[in-house]
Length: 508
Image 1 (cartoon, one colour):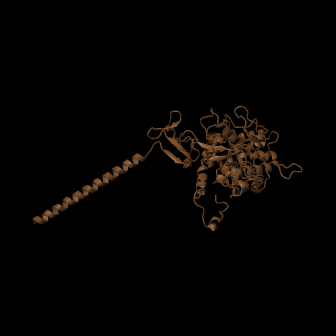
Image 2 (cartoon, helix red, strand yellow; image 1 turned 135 degrees about the vertical axis):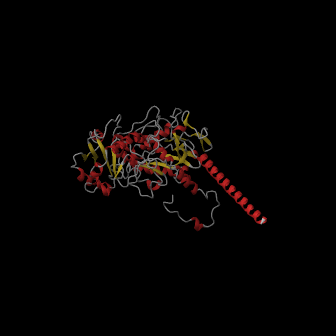
């Protein structure tokens, strides 16, 4: 009996010890889990990503996260840095969670995060490719004008809408000034091996606008001749031979501006207005950059209009009878022409066309942007400048910086097949409430600066936004170059058949 009691009491003690051990283990696990969660939580977090989390560009939405300058790291390329605005201290320098100033290493050097360090090597092309097209004459050995004192004038009218090449080149030249503004997105370097991208300063849109007409007794027009010269010059450069053009940047904003040279220069990154005239193996959204048009209508300063003070519901003025995707224009004209609060008429830039369009857009709640001969047009950016909510009917349109802003926050998108149904579009627009329109109208006023061109460039204006879009392509370019160079230092293959296997045309 005594032995049984001893065994029984031993079991009780063992069970109590086991329960105690289990309880302590559970408590320690909970405490350690709580500690880990607390140590990883950041009330003011810093997120490294290519895309911001907000529905539209973080600097614009009034939320507490600001999209700060983007930095191009030598290994990982460009990154957009999201940081709580309260983390910005003392002259814009960024403080980390521990209060220490954060820096980013780039090619062995440290740069403050309030600097964008996309490095650009720009070819010193002869003046005939750029400012010479503006009738500027070089003085001495320099191929560039002194843009601090005398900027060659750019022709007005429709030429202005594709003047992207002019503004970007000015920005690269200005980056060399000792007194250059601190908030920069690009800096010119003189050694191409230090560059993130190789910039080709050919004013291709201006070349097309000025020299695309062939003179009598000429086999080729001046624009074709310049493109041939450009291809010959570029492909002879060591920078092109080294990369096959994969790290080059070429501007072709006018849809017809590089039609002759594009098949030979396609490995480069193009800056385009859309992909309407380009096959996907030559230009695509993964490889290339979409830039905004420069709007022709003046910016609407001090806009105090309201939903009720804009009497026109829906506005369109432009060419009505177009080909290809633009056939929807004439369909919509017949559907909408008799609506009492809709303005849908033919118009052009001639005479007082811009003045009438300015007055019309500023008096309208919604402005139609319908595909024409190409998916995009300057009309969208005129509408933004007028704070007239854009209604986009263009299924194949590509939009500038759409990887960082959500156009659906301030634009209405309607499929073409729906828009040309009887009464569909007008009923849809009439159904948008005053409150919703006012929200989008306010948003247009907040984002309009993203589409403004300035010299010198201003923080997050169109010039800097385009450069930032280019910077986001740098990692993909570097990946292609590094993959391409895997066997550059390997011994030559003895297998001749293996060496002769061709790569697919769109491999890159």
